[in-house]
Image 1 (cartoon, rainbow, N blue to C red):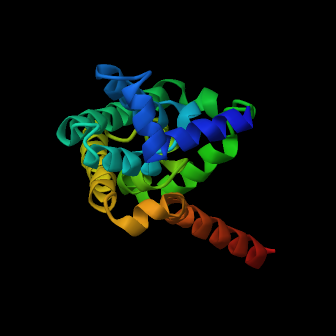
Image 2: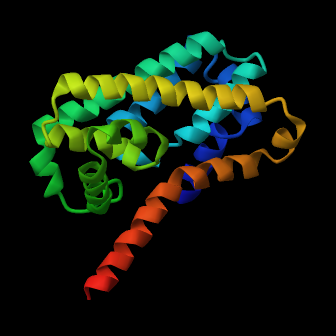
Length: 218
């Protein structure tokens, strides 16, 4: 299962393989629908935390630069997917939050991810909705935690729209601009790994800080 998941991840983050997928099995409107579903699932469903976010959007930008996707259409569609996804996560939090926090771990659910996001939310408040867009895992659970905390929806919506549009635009345009740079294309896997590392760096820093604080308390 892990090998299949990794291969799926590589397809979504390798321009040539993604182009092949979009021009064969998912040609035409199906390609846009599939990308919408992936971005929506990662931001709107708690089980979507394992899906690629930043790296997928970067790759989409590269593919659009190669002429296989319409840059304007894909940006508008994925911005909508990100905003609707967060809104869905928020509603799930408002309705089922307390029950989810009590749920035991499973293959697709880890309570620690939820608790880490809750701590992040308590530290940064509503701005978490914007910050979280650029942080894997936290991105998936942040709107849910905002719903559990019963954050004012008008306030949440403004953060959601601003963050969703900014995240999609920044990552796709970065891929669109750098996708034709020879050194980037030659070392694309390393570039993707770099994007992932930069994305998870805030989580690593917060984890190290929390460990040090616990050691001081002891």
